[in-house]
Image (cartoon, rainbow over all chains, first blue to last red; front, top):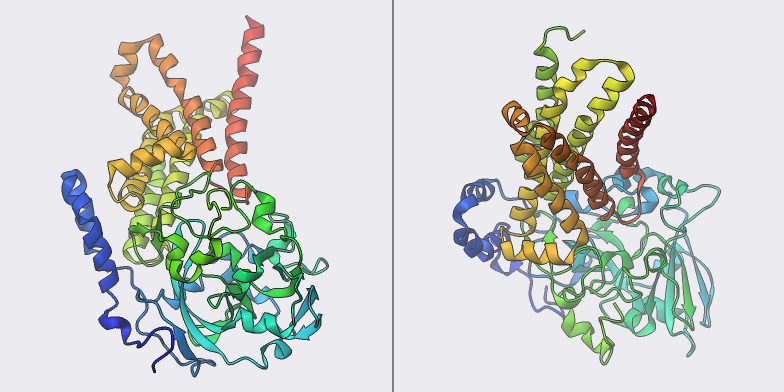
Length: 323
Length: 197
């Protein structure tokens, strides 16, 4: 069905193997140029390709959601999206969140709205979701650890949600918080690897950008707990940690809110944390990334490939300073 | 227990070779998770470090327990450390840096943790080359001096490991404690012997 953002979806004539083949193609010269280890390379190229997903499986609870944003690359497999997570509340190993997923109780769920707005208060998840029509958006998620996934999210624009609370003219920023119950901490919250609760934030114009998205599902079905159920943020032009999971609080604020990773290591994680291949993490390079499902790395794109939609937000800003 | 002279060595050989066999098997069967290259990199790096620590533990074990036989596996575990370090570097070079020397050079220049890890690997080379009995006899006292490099290598490896962690230091703590224990026991016996003479 035609959508306003992307005219048509038919996998763009791509089969699941096409993308990986292109990667091998791009790196081909280097292999030929340095024949010494060509043998081991041949081994790699003979391996069954690390598969991407087949055409989107639309069977779940939200199968009817219309696709409003597309991505030309094949989707990352659901199995990979749900078993390789950074969600420290459920443990610091990538596999911990899936293992400990049951510890997160998502019902009942409330979100507290605070700060510079006309309609603060406690809202049930049902209240929050009621007026919104769910849509599907395929975004690339780029982790600060130099890996990325192509994920079909189900949700609605963040702007549509925020407008309902009628933020006033002092609302310059939006702050978010993840669930943290001191008396009943999640498995990963028993150790203070992060000063709990996890906090994130956006500038108001970033939050109102049409790309900013609140997700309640993926792959046509409910969001698995390890992916930030029942409701999470998705800001595709920023490093993954900005897309805060399992949100219980939204606060409109006059000043820039303190965010968790910036709190832990300010030199390494700025408030903005836009995907930027020209600004390296102090300890590792951000020039390239590994698409989950592939063996070799590919170049990282400015603003994760969403430059057209968001570059104007940062006009005149020195992105080396405001990393 | 392990009375036959070759048995301890055979047991060590199989135990230290097993991890790489398991990794290759799991890689071929896609059992290394969503990011198999990362798993391979971390596992080979950890095994290089474990083998180095085993080799560093031989002398303290002998000093504390009096079991001299343990010294028979010191060289082998050192060589296994080099073996895993080579795999570790090869995986990084092939998959992370697409076999490009230029990319590796950029990384070496800009990333201290890469510089440290690479230095540790380079320093293992002379130790590997001089690990034979013949070389040891030929070099005499110089051999002992050269092989003291192993302490520096272990510290470089530890720093390389710590430098990449984002927030959770619990895993590396075990390695750090193990290394500290081997050094502390050495220091104790060194001081004890120094006062005796």
